[in-house]
Image (cartoon, rainbow, N blue to C red; front, side, top):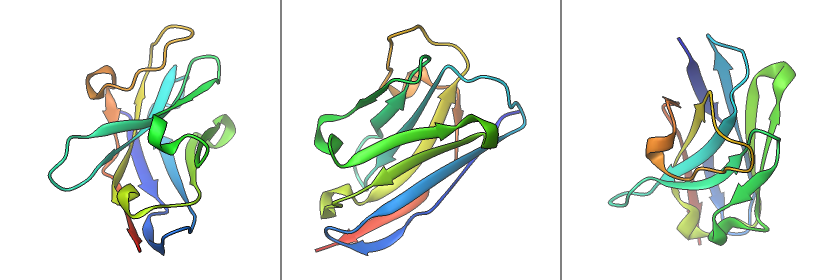
Length: 126
């Protein structure tokens, strides 16, 4: 059974930075696609960053240039470096993974992912 555990959330002022981590346990083999999603109160969960089968990345427009997704396969850990944070980035952040996805495909839909963490809260004040 795959378990994903996020950490690194917190409260920061606008312009600040946070680094989220997601440690995977249980199945530690390859996951073709991994992603970070977020969900603000009253809003749908949305994908913000995806790392694909070949290690390439893709980002939702509002976070491009500010967020960086990366992974350390030796540590089974996914990261999200978030810089220049804005109040509108306030949300619960979730990591997600799926064992199989195609090369060059970067899924941003919730339904594309099989495994989910419990989330870590990020709050950005103005």
